[in-house]
Image (cartoon, rainbow, N blue to C red; front, side):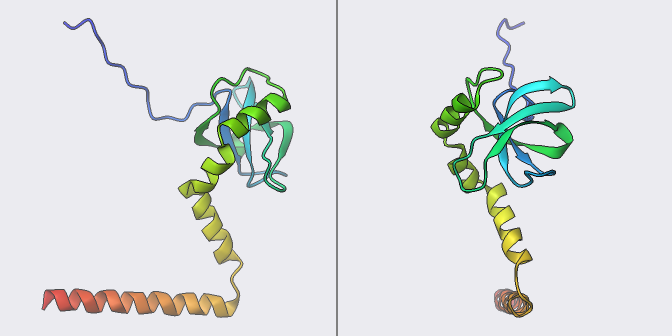
Length: 145
C-alpha cells in the first residue's frame, strides 16, 4: 500500500471568509460583496467596497439564501476585517475586473440589454434569428447534397 495519498479538493464553492458573493435579493440586489464573518449557519456578514459607481455594499448581515457564491476568493482576508482592509485586498485581487470578464457578468449584461429592448428592436432580433436559421439550414443542405 502506498504511503502517499493524493487528495484533491472538491469543486464546491465553500462559505468562507473572503469568498466573493453575488447578492440576489434585497436592497443591494445585483451587487458584489465579500464574506467578512460567518454569523451562524444561515447568515453572514458581508462588505462590498467596490469602486464602481453605485456598486458598493455597506457592511451588513445577510442570509445565505439571498446570495450566490462566486468562484472568486480574497485570499488572506482576516476574520472581521475592517472596510479599509477589505477594500485594499479587493483592489489588489482585482475582483471588479475578474467579475466583468466572467461569463456570469456577461450573461447578466445580455439579459439586461434584452429586457430593455423596444418592440421594434425585439422584432429585429426575431428577424435576425430567422435569417441565421435559414442560412444554417441552407449550408447544411448544401453539405448533405
